[in-house]
Length: 338
Ligand code: NAD
Ligand code: LMR
Figure 1: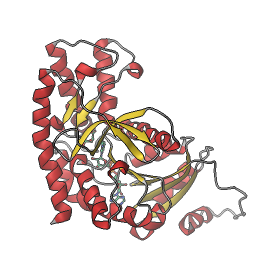
Figure 2 (figure 1 turned 90 degrees about the vertical axis):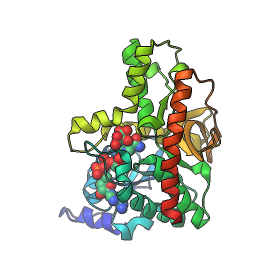
Figure 3 (figure 1 turned 180 degrees about the horizontal axis):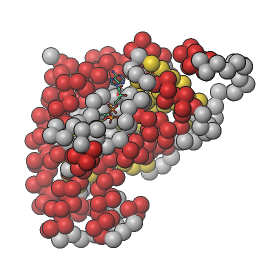
Figure 4 (figure 1 turned 30 degrees about the horizontal axis):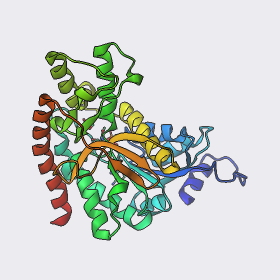
């Protein structure tokens, strides 16, 4: 990568030809939006992942600095820098997994849908690059509003004739991570041992924690159910308000994104029983996209699990979630179709 070499030389050090053999065996991963609040810690954590052999860091600004910094970590992955639209295609060629945290975050008072006007176009452009350069890659889409950006990506891939619903996943892992933490706090459990399925989508009432299906089995009072449901649904806003104009969740998101990407890579490697929640093309409800538990395999999603038995509280929540989700999905689809 010429840009990367130029950057190395700019330190004034004499260049020597390196004898590196091209990194450990593993998967090739690109992060689009790698210089951002999520992108930087995500890049660092992916550089530490032993399943990654090559890590491409793409952004429209500041990717040289982030790459120089991260490339000094003595872990297996080879890191390369890509800066600006003219290098997008080089960043994507040959990738097995593309993680997309590019786009603007919320400020206090905004909904995720308020980000649509800017982020829809960014996601469209990046997905057009994927159709050309790595149409078989697994795509982990983080950019908000996820409830609309995933349908946008699907329409871009359909238009190009490369769409495979098994390979497109909206990342809702952060809400699962929060749900595990908050339930553990209330029940006095170790969060590492708690599993809360969170279904629906990734905004407000579309986030539906299934507290009746928590593992280990827990029973909650009506007050605890209300408190936990509301805290999980509003966890993103809690961080946006605490950051007071400086953005939304970045560190916990990078942690969650790596947890999810690692699951995708273990699936690609052929590990058995890799199961996580994600927002995907789905027949679990009448909606074309829905978040629920999926099993990850060698070609992406191998199986989408049904919701299982819901209690009355969850059935009411499901109806509210579906109403808002239907509109957000349609908004994404129309953005490409119009
Ligand atoms: P940020 O502003 O800190 O970083 C975004 C990065 O994207 C910047 O470096 C910017 O240069 C880059 N970018 C902008 N346009 C680009 C383009 N066309 N191509 C490539 N890169 C581009 O924002 P952040 O805090 O990292 O958040 C990023 C997105 O992730 C936001 O939309 C936010 O709402 C979303 N998010 C989603 C979740 C989730 O759970 N899915 C959680 C947190 C944040
Ligand atoms: C989150 O859940 O933290 C993200 O979706 C970011 C946001 O805007 O809340």
